[in-house]
Image: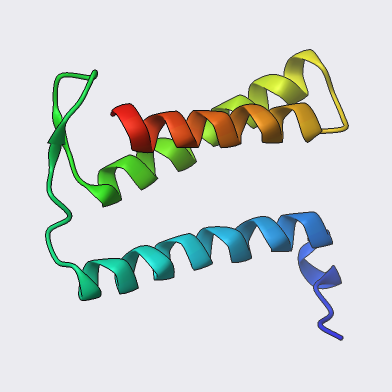
Amino acid sequence: MLDLSWMAWTWPTTAFFVFIFLCIAGMGIWEWKDPGGGPRHGILTLNTTRGDRLFITILGSAFIFLGWLALMGTPLWGALVISIAYGIGVFRWV
């Protein structure tokens, strides 16, 4: 078993960073298989690529979770649902 106690990490924190790593690795593989990704002109009135949309999703989700923690506290299931819906919206319309 991996001992992360020296960093005071919890398993949810580790899972979060593993998820971020897997998203970036998956995006790299996707870009390698299908280069370019076809930039789109979305509702933000700027051209975005897949990587831009991933960054916007991750950054926005972090703020959603922080806002949820500030206003509602734990558990974070509501923030997770909102973040997933937000991510789908960003990849669909931005």
